[in-house]
Amino acid sequence: MRRRTLPEPAGFRRAEKAEPGGARRTAAAIALAWALLAAGTGLATPAAAAVERARLTNGDRAALVDKRDLFLETVPKRGEGLITFSRRVTGSPKHTAAVGKANGNPRRLLAGVRYRVPFGLIPPERQLAVIRALYPTDKGGADGWVHRTRGESLEKVAEWFTSGANAVATLRSRNKLGKGKLAAQTTLRIPNEILRAPFRAPAAPSVQAAAEAPPPAPAAAPAPVEVAPVLLPSPAPTISAGPPEGSSPAAPPTAPAAAPPVASPSAPPAGAISGTTPTSPPPPAAAPVSGVETGTGARPLPAPSGTVVAAPDAVVLASPSGPTISAGPASAGLPPAAALPAPSAPSGPLQYGEDAKGKFAIYALHA
Image 1: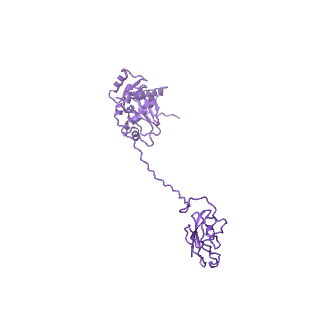
Image 2 (image 1 turned 30 degrees about the vertical axis):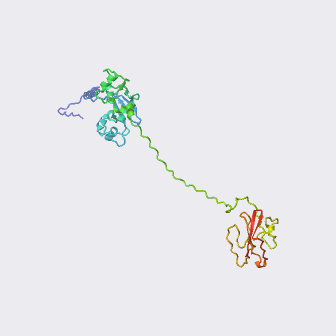
Image 3 (image 1 turned 120 degrees about the vertical axis):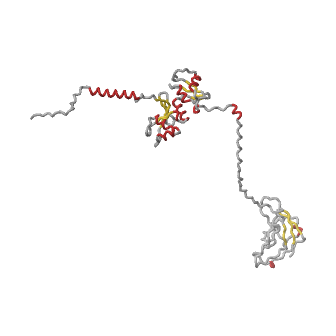
């Protein structure tokens, strides 16, 4: 079977066989072209910047980049965008563009990532915290601020610490510096007249101001404390039985003396009783019937019904301390008065006697 060769179309050209190493030369040429293009348009990748960091007490970072730029590095809060982040850290939303430029203009902020805020945009108290973290040997005093450099230029020192127009010239003259580059570890003294407020030490009060100051007002006296009176219960009065009215001072208790005998028909003459002391024990005294007891002040007791009471023949008045003589025999359990013999009246209107308690008188009574 024969092969037939078709005619080739007009303009058709067969591909030549590639020579060895041609593809490698083509790739190298393309890479060189891109490198030249990038160098011409400024798109060359910069070298990694030297960053020195120090930790702040609240967890933020202070950063010194290439020994010329200061930054505060902090983490955004949850849900914060670039505008709210800039307003919280700098105090104003007007710095959003500058904060975005320092971080490559991110479209959104990522949680847990620290973003840089330029030193000149943060509040004064945060500026002081950044300087103290990166330059721990710096200190303020009455004559200004003492700063020890780490390779930054004098212009950067003036930008961070001063606010005067001719601050660089003032720093050179005060520190006796030449026009050359500032060496690292140079100690600079920044005077108060050009020093910014966050780095100034609080001024001590002058002697004249202290002398002109008015004396402190005397402390107010404490208000008097009113103490409410406390009423204590008064002790109950002690009532003691005193001696009867007109009596002598109380004597030690003694056994009651027997009452003297009442005059009877068989009684001795009056002369035998007067001035004598009975020697024989007297008979027991009968209970009073009429209730009349001389010297006791008691009211007469009513006689029980159906009882015949005999009239007393005589009443013996005794001294207050002497024995009480009843006015007659009791009627209880005794026969009627008519059955008793009537005693004879003693001779004389008044007779005297004496016993162990003292003297007494006998009065004669007639019914």
